[in-house]
Image 1: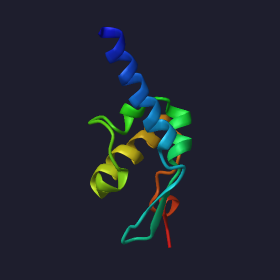
Image 2: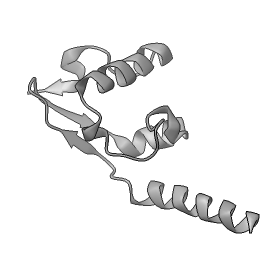
Image 3: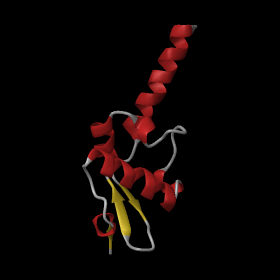
Image 4: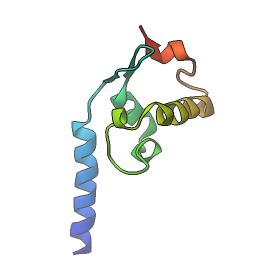
Length: 90
């Protein structure tokens, strides 16, 4: 039984990765934000960095969450955009 549960969890994690969008476009009042989801998956290899509460659409998480999480991670890793114009394209 334990092996079955572990296999189902692994399958669910793999399925989420396999069916996730390559690039997600988020509408924003200051300009469209393009989020390269697949690139982040390949670089981070840890979905919980962004999806701490489990799977979900990044568009549903909101501006405050994105600014804190995305910009914070980019600043911490010294990699990725951190200024408004780098993410928000008009």
